[in-house]
Amino acid sequence: MARRKRAHGKLASSSMSPRLRTVLRWLPRVGGIAFALFLALFAFDVFEGEATPMERAIGLGIHLLPNFALLALVAVAWKRPWVGALGFGVLALAYVAIAREHPTWIALIAGPLVLVAAFYALAARLRV
Image 1 (tube, rainbow, N blue to C red):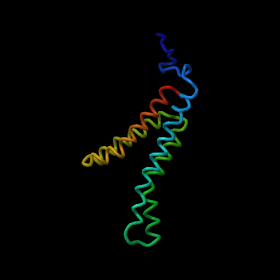
Image 2: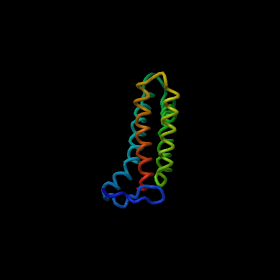
Image 3: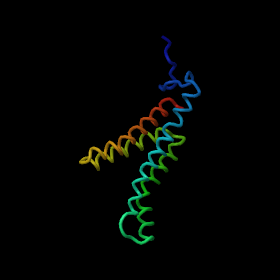
C-alpha cells in the first residue's frame, strides 16, 4: 500500500482525479446555495391570511433575511472553505439550541447545515 504524501499536515490532493477534485470543490458551495433555496420555501407562508401587499412584501423580506445571511456565508467561504465549515457548523449548533424541543425541525434544518459544514471541512482539509 502506498502512503499518501502529506503537505504541511494536510492530505495532498495531487493524487486525486480532476473530476473528484471538481466535485469536492463544488459540493459545499452548491449544498449551501441549495439549502438557502430550501429555506426560502418557508418564507412563502407570508402569503397566507389577510394582509396588505405592503405588509406581505415586508414580511417576505424579513423571512428571507436568514437566506441572505446564508448566501453571504457561501460568498465569504467561496475562497476560504474553513469559514464555511465553521459558519455552517455554528449555525447548526445554534439551531439545535433554539429548537431543542422539536427534534423533527432539528433534523430538517440542522441536519443539512451539518452536512454542508462537513463538505466545507473536507474541501478545506484537502485544499480543493
